[in-house]
Image 1 (cartoon, one colour):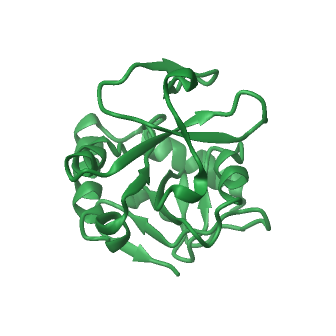
Image 2: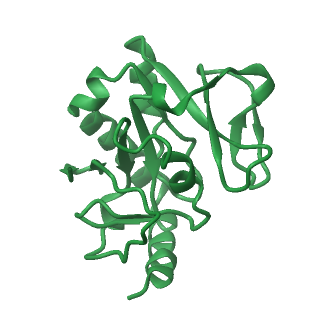
Length: 190
């Protein structure tokens, strides 16, 4: 199956999960993350706000904030196409919708953090395989942005276990993951 077909099938699959299944999966991912050394010892962690049936990392973000970790969210770069900035975020802070309808902090009210200062980036995924390959929504935002920090920052994908597939055809520009966390387990890749 090609990546386009995998993406379509997995998006439908995660969107079909009930609110209860989504909530249980998000709780399970938070429990699994709390066992992962990169999450436990990381001081600066980039999260995302769930969209389109993605695993919701807000529970994990609350745990991180309670532990005194600095939390960041992606914001669309205003000038460079298909790139992201990461800005500091605290629960309750004002969010606005970007051009895709996804909530994000406003740039003028937040300080942009250099990517190299982030210890862990938690990435949403549409699909993944056990070799650390991931399919996102197809825009390449994370791959283009994270290529600047490859090797220094830990990249950890978050997904429902039902989003696993046997194999994803990777491209030269794809950023591989060091780990994948689902509600059931942690898959260490590199």
